[in-house]
Image (cartoon, rainbow, N blue to C red; front, side, top):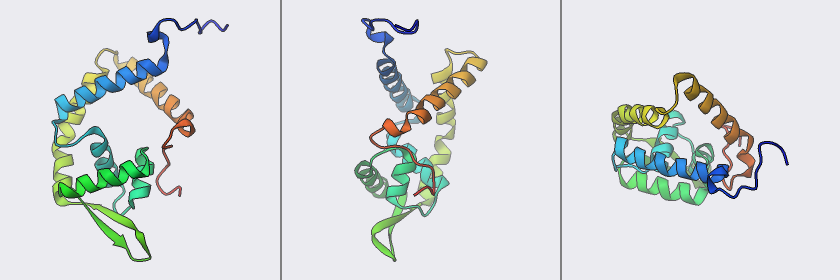
Length: 159
């Protein structure tokens, strides 16, 4: 057995369990810092839409790393809240082009301080260099295992 492995009898030796716990903690802090107007997934979709205006629901879901049925539901909720508009694409009536509304842009702008607090708070137990290293390693872990996801992340325009 390699020196990095054990019998994994302690649940906290399982990286997946620790990642799940980290996600639980992150979501809890998200609501503390960002309020309850958006869920973390709604925030991610709206934030990505701001960077990719006019994209369709399928592509937005792909760059956010969520499945298309969840993406459609999230877009419908954001539309109900008046934060995005969905319009039929003339050459493909099954797809919807998405644009963020002025209200959506204002909300994202209002959430910037909360997002900054969330990031600082979540990474606070680590020193500055450790924070950079953690983000680098976490990004590498996610990117290297992307294809193992049920909804692999795709780069914008890689369709």
